[in-house]
Length: 248
Image (cartoon, rainbow, N blue to C red; front, top):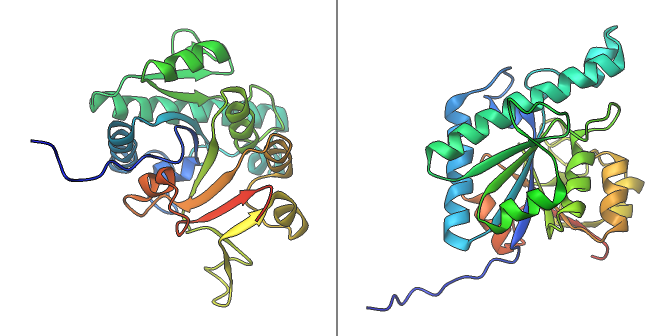
């Protein structure tokens, strides 16, 4: 019997999902919450199996250590940034474990060589993993200090020819002000890259925004905490989050 339910084609076939370190724990906490990680992994697996979406993931490390914050408290910036990179690897391994426990083949690649732990990042190998149906998690940032994981997300997305950067946050898009502090803050549904820079909106750092602008790579900022949002964004639901692109 043929199902009467229509098959919905996703807007994006290959996505780069940017997860902050804070997304892997409970609000205001440090470390990793296995239940939270499991929930994110379950969403990714469901979307991948339903729509055959190719997922590359870049993890942050702010739930363990944030390099720029540590440097402001007296730590050498380069040392602090390398510690932050190692924190992203810890997060990547936790997410890989959750995905593989659900039967989803996953590979972690790192920008800093650590062969006992993960593969080195090699662009052609990463693309091949995606083509074979594996999820790839790209850790250790770009391997260079002074560069954020947002910049890494933009860089890796361009390298692997992803169609969009999905910036997962704790709020439902980009606002004119902090919605937790200003009840009159306005949520934008669509912005250009120049809007983000000119308005001083703290979405991703300027290097990441510029890289996306120069390569016409759209960014969708959305709320990760609402179940089903990853699927909605992949399907192109424009009521979810804020899209940043060349033209409104």
